[in-house]
Length: 371
Ligand SMILES: *Cc1c(COP(=O)(O)O)cnc(C)c1O
Image 1 (cartoon, rainbow, N blue to C red):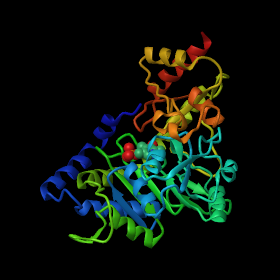
Image 2 (cartoon, rainbow, N blue to C red):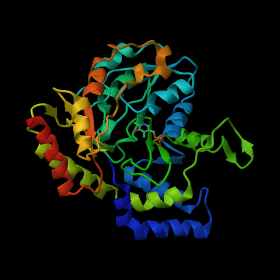
Image 3 (spheres, rainbow, N blue to C red):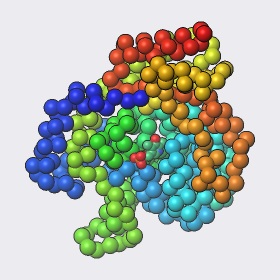
Image 4 (cartoon, rainbow, N blue to C red):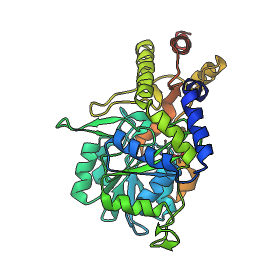
């Protein structure tokens, strides 16, 4: 699905030097590269505060912690996401409330938000799935009217541009009260292990979160509140500094691959190519198609037999997962999500896809539908 090896080979000189430099200085924790990466990412995103942390799940957890919610408070997110989006809500003894997605963008459908809001609702976690933004303008409007905080899960959309109806532009993850992201190796900006970050324009939240990820401490061995240990390793920051310089090129390579897929697959009547919404660019963390007719299992088996990687993101919606049974959701509660889980499939998408590979993949997909 991704080719991290060839991406590394292209950046080998720069990355090896960054790694060696970290080893030479032995500043493995909170070294200078962590601060430089923090500042460079803040400048790339045009946001005041970036707090690097251990991974994207920690980023969500600390973001939620910083809002001082009470057990039983409700937090809204979508059932069509990676497990982390709901896991952190439950872990903090808050109550996840799910809202279905719109079938074009796979993102939270703001027209369904009002029905989900109660007097216990405190926050919304929109997930910018597959590289494209949720409708933040509508979400922020409703959040504002009900005094709710928003945390954008930007793990799959770091660098995506959002355009408001007045043409103002902002980067995904810098629009709500808080944004979170992940540097998991396969993400658009991935390191060589785990990593994450929290973004905010709010100085108080920024200060609070900086303290929280460091055991709740501002002054060494003095603790103002209960915190966690969640840091980005210096080695990872050094690697991310190199990759951040190439992030816009990476997006461009993915967008070109997506355009080639569109061109080759757009005319197959049984398939729907990824939808694009007018308010967001798409950085194609995944290229996800919808099979409108036929057996997905059969198609997947066929493509894998031709050595074409295929993945299903996500095969079982969050509300139907065993660990979340006690939320008392059932099959039928989120029809769009459920139908997407049964019909989507993703094909290889990364920065190193070559024309021949795309042609090979598309040729077999076309052939499958001609049989
Ligand atoms: C990857 C991902 C996360 C979690 O990131 P980790 O760094 O693996 O903890 C959270 N949300 C979404 C939508 C993701 O894709």
